[in-house]
Image (cartoon, rainbow, N blue to C red):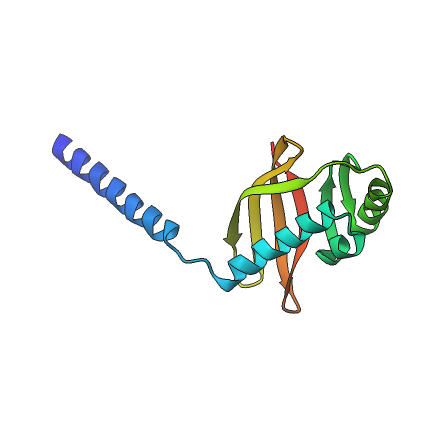
Length: 144
């Protein structure tokens, strides 16, 4: 019985190792790249205080977890908050560290990474959807 348990455990470990390696070696798809580009465009718009481009990265029904607003807001409220912030109340640059993109299907993805602003880093999730051929951010949230 001990031999079977050891053999079974070794088999499970080997299978999990193969699955992990196969996933790690999956080449980045064009959709993976497009999601990363959407996030980079969002980040760049923030850093360049480009409100029009920032809003263009969001779907009309997006729900954004905004540290500037102190709560989750819709796109309309986010526009007002960011307009205020970018009108002289804005300091800092954002980076997105180690974004991990997970494609749930051909039109839905999540990306998780660390959103860093001036050395203050917080885990963040972006929900992204492909709509009319374009990847748009439909929601964001800070993670605990």
